[in-house]
Amino acid sequence: MNTTIQTDERAGLVSASGFERIYNCPGSMAAEAAIPKPATETSNDVALFGDRVHAALESGELVDLAANEEQVAVKIRQMEHLAVDQWLTDLGCNEKAEDLVVIREQRSWVTDAGGNKLTSAKVDVAYIVENRKYRHCLLLDAKTGFLEVTKASANWQLRVGIVALDKEHGPFESARVAIAQYRLQEKFSRCDYERSNLDHAYNEIVFHISRAQQPDASRSAGKWCQYCRALSHCQTAAANALLPSVVAQTISLPKKADIELRVNELAPADLAYIQSRKTAATNLFEAVSNRLKSLPEDELKVLGYELAPTGMNPDTFDIASIYGVLVKEKLLDPNKPEDAALFRSWCKMVLGDMKESLVERIALRKELSKKDAERWLMDGIKPHITYKEKAKALKQIKP
Image (cartoon, rainbow, N blue to C red; front, side, top):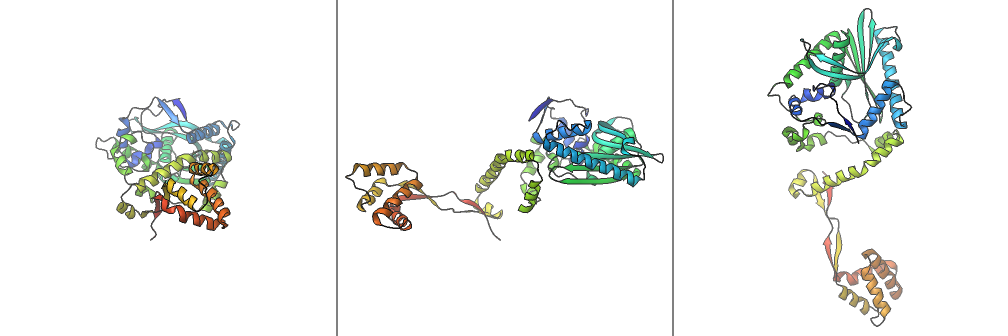
């Protein structure tokens, strides 16, 4: 984890990265505004990884990156070059990439008719070209994380970004937005805007911000709640958390072969990172299992599970009676101090070791096989042992 002093370059307004939340949950804008902003901002390892890769792409210097970071940066830069070449070809332009206007890591603003700031976008990289007296723009968003990203045609971050660029560097006759993602595997998504599409997107942004500014703006919980600062104070999100099946049933688990294929593509540093999270994942599944086990039997069956017996464990031993059995069968001589010492040592052993030592003695004295000696032992001392049921295991009921 890393902590930095936070300065709000967004001027306290919703930015492109948070616009999908405003679209889905208009009331979240007021909810966040009621929560004091932290003086410091904490980043996790995945976020820091992305920050370093983006900084390297901005500067063009990859020498300070770790091997796995350099791998991602190189791949995204290749995807960027291919996207620019394809865009210029589709436009029918003869210009080369080095002749274009390039905007990297700069914030642009969407304003209303009066020039008031509404929202902003800090774009990863944008290319602008003039062709036949018309201006065109390509906006690329680089993603370095593991999570699935909304495709370009439905991506509000890109939509706000291209409208902000259009307001500050346009007007554009056409625009292309694209997502270049590389971590587990390469993914590329793009969407083209005509002039009318850009105008419509601007009107949508104005509408959704106006809707969010209404005092009775509604709230709606979903995956967009993850980065909302009001999450821990939101009753709507809390109610949604009581319905895990809504999310859980949409998760598709890849087959083992698919998992192995993806793991084989990971850099060693990524493998180490995932391994470091093993304990947390194990604790999560253990907590889920324990919670399910605590549910009433009828409720558990509705969910398709039951608690199945797993056997019995020895609980208490009648030491005097067991000693009497061994003496009666001449496995111990009460007149020999060494036999008394041997029995005391057995009593101090864990059950498995005690059983093994006794079986060896029985097999030798009674000339039995080890298997028969074990059976004889258990038949002889079982009446003098009380058992308790092992903890039941969670079992899925087969249809």
